[in-house]
Length: 256
Image (cartoon, rainbow, N blue to C red; front, side, top):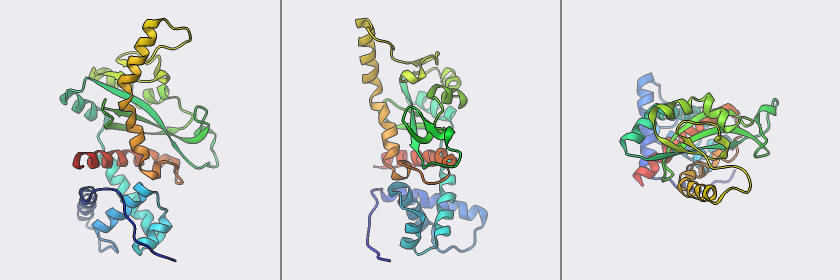
């Protein structure tokens, strides 16, 4: 086994934040001595999420077993996921911040094939994965991410399953979405469909795309964390991973 020095492109404040979450959890459960202190465990988790290193690689780099690396990651991801805002909280904060409209978009988190893989195959993307719904601010800041549904789920169906349309109606904030949400109604505005549209509809679609474009960067921000480019774990963990990473991404931007 060869070793080398490496870096992860995250701030010290993000590391301290995650370490603080771990430290408070250990104190709450009265955890016994562990091989890695909270700061080392936090770094291990950030390396896994940001760089996508395997548990075997993490174990070798941090001097722990593969099983211990897995336990540390699982524990921390669940702690961070639990701290992510609920959809109602996120929408209320958006209103307090004076946000005039939001962007709703779905993203597919690619996964390895599994034994019962038919529900996880996305006909739209032609790959296996999990459907995640993302609500973002106009500037691209991630406000909320949903749990995970099999990749075959349609975006509009996913929005209904997670109660997104009901919460948006209650919040009374205009939401821009793509053609996959056509028929949602309420505050959800989608582009016009069909060929040979009149000039007025074409202008409306261009304006819609221009306003929605920056907000679509939210999904790209999630994928900068390499663990989400292709999951090699249980597909059902995609939702918790996205919630944890959205929390870290927002913290990184706020402290950056």
